[in-house]
Amino acid sequence: MSFLALRDVAFQYPGTPPVVQGIDLALAAGEIHCLVGRSGCGKTTVLKLAAGLLAPSAGRIEVRGGATLGPGEVGFVFQAPTLLEWLRVRDNVLLPVSLQRQPTPADAHATQALLARLGLAGLAERYPRQLSGGQQSRVALARALVTAPALLLLDEPFAALDALTREELQCDLRELAKARGTTVLFVTHDVGESVFLGDRVSVLAGGRLVRTIVSPPGAQRDTGAFGAACAQVRGALGQAVAASEAAPA
Ligand SMILES: Nc1ncnc2c1ncn2[C@@H]1O[C@H](COP(=O)(O)OP(=O)(O)OP(=O)(O)O)[C@@H](O)[C@H]1O
Ligand SMILES: [Mg+2]
Image 1 (tube, rainbow, N blue to C red):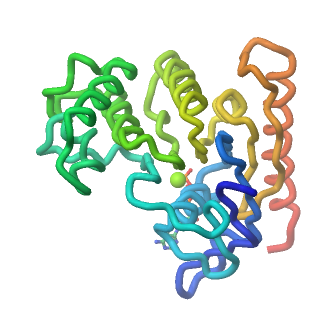
Image 2 (tube, rainbow, N blue to C red; image 1 turned 180 degrees about the vertical axis):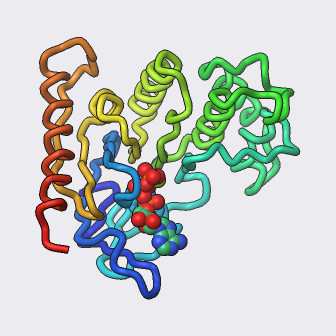
């Protein structure tokens, strides 16, 4: 049984053509699945549908075979960090907990451990305005992880980071998700990031899934298998663009 499944899902805003359609996507428990595509192709829309933030116009979405996930079981990292500027870093990270109940010493410990893991150990008392853009992105990631959610949905969370920091965080996220058995749907427009992070990569173009590619195991960037998988993703992206250009208006 899939952990998360989208079955023939479509979504459209009132009075507009479908933004996404015919989306069939099934994630096994513990899988990291990347969704890659060009700007405007519908990636964020698919993620919001998976999160239940948008309701499908057609088709259905199943989590754990129909059961709904409770508060704290889904973590979402938005395209912008969306931190609360009047809360210190520590309290921003603890927010998903404090919205539900009084945080315990164990929650405080988990927060501190995550901050340390993400290179933010000394910044817990700062406010978001006192952080760099990359540090803010990491706080948003810590906030999504603090409840140890079963499902983690991320929308280009590393897009604003430099290449080295980005690669470090990709490794951290992969290790954390695999250690915890978290199921992850990760949106990016970066082909290398998608192949490195994802167990599988789905290519989205013009609101449709055009291909799914299996990443080589081991997540090594300097192998021929890695390069070949990247070429497959690029090929699928290119073919989708060529097909849409050839289609009559
Ligand atoms: N509120 C809205 N009303 C109408 N159309 C919208 C609305 N929000 C998004 N769209 C359109 O839906 C399409 C898909 O948007 P979406 O945000 O899913 O794209 P994306 O792949 O995440 O793009 P990016 O990589 O730029 O973030 C776009 O063409 C966008 O203009
Ligand atoms: Mg988007």
